[in-house]
Amino acid sequence: MTIALEPAHMNRLFPSHMVVDLHLTLLRVGDGLCSAIDGPRVGEYLLDYFHWSGADPVADFARIAASGEFLRLACKQDRALLDGTAVPIANGYLLAVSQIPAMFSIEDGTLQMSDFGLADSIVAGLLLVAMQRALLDESSQMAAELAAEREKNVYVINRGRRFAGYTAHDFNNLLSIIKLNATRIEQAAQIPDDVRRRNGIILETAERGSEIARSLMTLSNQKHDSPQIIAVDALLAEQRSYFEHIAGRKADVMLDLHAPGVTVKASTSGLINSVINLVINARQAMPDGGMIAIGTTLEPAAFNPVAAAFGRTVGNWIVITVSDTGYGMTEQVIRHAFEPFFSTKPHGSGMGLASVREFAREMGGDACALSNPGAGATIRIHLPAIDAATGADAASALPAGDKPAPARGTGISVLLVEDEPYALEALSEMLESMGFVPTCATSVEEGRAHLESRHFDILLTDVKLHEASGIDLASLAWRDRLVDRVILMSGYVPDEDTLDSAWQFVRKPLDVESLVHMMRANT
Image (cartoon, rainbow, N blue to C red):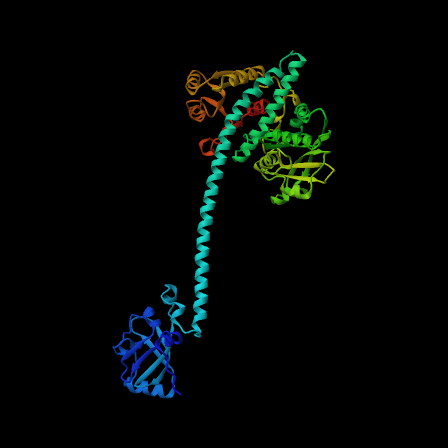
C-alpha cells in the first residue's frame, strides 16, 4: 500500500526531512532544517552540505534504503548531526531524519521544539532545557529586583537614621538647657515648696523628653558616653531619690543591692538612663500602684547565661534587676519586648527596652526579661565586672558621698566652650559650685584666645558650634598640648574617625553627676 503525504504533513512528522533523487540532488527540504543549518537548498547536491566517507555515495544510499540501515549525516558548516534512515520513494529517497542538537544550539536558542517531530525524544530534553533557562532568567530577574529593593530600603533607613540623629541633636540641646537650669533651682538653698513642686514637674517632663531623645538616638545607632569605671551599687544608691521621683507617688521604690564595691566599665548616663527607662515601664505596668525593686547581684561567669553565650568562663558578672508587681508579660510579648517599635501600650514608642538592650550590648553585656502574666515582670541587665586591680582605680568612679574626698572639682581648671548662652551660664555656675574653675567661651575663636593665654586641665566643648566645630578646637589644643584632657559634648555622637582615642565624650542632655564623675577621673 502506498501512502501519499503532502509536504505540510511531512513537516509535521519530520520537520528536518529531505527528499533527494537517485543521484542525491535535493528536491525538497523540511522547514526544521532551515533554522538550524545554513542550507541545504533545493536543486543542489546533498553531499555539498554533509560529510560522507563512502567511495560511491549513490550505491551506499541505495543499499541503506533497501536494508533500512541507520543513517547519520554530519553537517560541514557546524556540529549539527542528522540521524534517521533513507526510505525509497518513486525516483528517489525520503530522508526521514531528526536533529541531534549541539550544546551551543541549545544555549543560544537556535533550535526550537517545532524543529522536531511530535514523538521525537529530543523534545523532552529541549523542554527541560527551556524550563531551566526560564527558571534561571526568572531567578536572575528576581535577584536584581530584590537587590534594587534592598538598596532602596537601606537608603530610606539611612535617611531616617540621619534625620532621627539630627532631630535628637537639636532636641537634646534644648533639653540640656532645661535640665541644667531646673537642676540649678533644685540645688538652691531655699526655695518655696510650690516652686520646688513646679520645678519637679519641669524636671520630670524633661526626663520624659529625654526618653524620646534616647529613642531617636537608638534609632540612629548613636553610641553612649565614653565608658568609665563605675561602682554600680554606689551609683544606684546615690540616684535613689531620683528613681523615687520618676516612680511617682503610687509606687514604692526598694533598693536591694548585693554587689558592694563591684565596678563595671560603662557609660554612667547610659546606665542611669537604662534604669530610669525600666522604672518608667514598671510604673506604667502598675496604674494602681505597687512595688518597684531595683537590685544587684554578683554571679560567676561560669553560672551566668550571658557570659556563657559570649564564651566567657572566668571572672564575674553583675546583674542589675528592675522588678515590678504589675500585670506581667506573656511569652509572646517577652519574645518581642526588646524589638524597636514594639509596644503593648496604645501610645508607646516601643524604644524603651530596645534602648536598654542596645546600651547593655554596647557595654559588652546583654539584657533579658522574666515574667508571668499577672505576676509582675523583671528586667535583667548583665554586665561584665571589672577587676579594679587590673583595670583602673574604681574608687575614682565612686560618688563623692562614698569617699572622704574634698570638693569634687577643687582646683581643676576647665575651658568651657558652648554657644548656647543659657546652657553655658547654667553649666558654668554648677561646675563652679562643685569646686571647678571654669573659663567660658562662646565660639572657637574665643576658645583659641583663652588657650593661647594659659594652660587648662580640661577642655569641655560642644561639638556643633554655630560657625565651626569643637573638634577642630580640640585637635588644636590636643596637638599643641594646651590641655591635659578633652571631653566633647553633643546631642549627636560624632563619627569615630574624627576623634582621638584619648578623648572622652558625653551626650546631651547633660547629666551633671555623670559629667562630674568623668571630669574627676584621672585628675
